[in-house]
Length: 283
Image (spheres, rainbow, N blue to C red):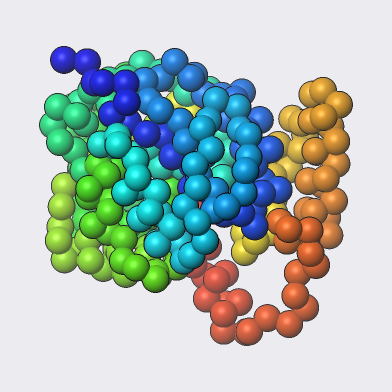
C-alpha cells in the first residue's frame, strides 16, 4: 500500500546564527532534489522568518540543540523524519524512485533508523533487500562508530525522540547517544544513497543508479574547503548567485564566522584539539 504523502517530513534543522548558509542550501537543494518525492518539506529556524524554495518555515524557539529538536518533532504530525541540516549542500541529483520505495518499505516494516550517507565510520552486513541497486544493509553496531549522528538519515520519529535528552548540545548527543544505542543494540539500516563529502560506497551494491552526494560546508562556525566547489558553481549562475559566491569567498578567505565576525583569536587549546579530532573522525 503506498505511503501517505504526509507521513514523511523532510526536516532541515537549522541554527539562526547560520543564516548565511541558507541561500547556499536553497540553491544546492533546488538544483539536485525532486520535489515530487512524497514528503512534506520543513525548514526549521529558531525565531527567524525565512523563505526557502519549496519549504514551509517552522520555528522551534531558542534553546539548546536537543531541546529545539524535541520541540520541532513534537509538533510535527508525520511518523517519519528525513533529517537534514543547513550546512549539508547537495551536489548530485537524487533518484526519486529510491525515496518513494524507501518510504513505503520503512512504513510497512516499521524501520526505526536508515542511515543514507556513506562513511568509513560504519561497518555493515549485507541483506537480501535492494532498492534501486542499493543494498539496504544492517549496521554492525559493535564495530561501527556514530550510531547516533546528525547526517542525512530517515528516522521513525518516536525512535529519534527517544535518542534526544534535554540540554544536550549536538556533539554530546552524538557521543552519548551512540553509547546509549550500543547498549540498546537496535536494528539500524544503511544505504549508500548519498556520498557524504565524496565518500565511497561501503556496501555490496548492484550498480545503483543516480547515487547522490552532499558536502558539509561548515566547520566550527566557519566555512571549510568543501565550499569551494559551490563557489565555482554559483559563479557560473545568475547575478544573485554570483553575488552570493563573492560573499562566500570573502567569508572563506578571511575565516569569518557565519554571522560575519572574525574568528576569536584566542581559543581554549583543549577545546580546539577536541573539536579538530571530532571533525576528523566524522569526515
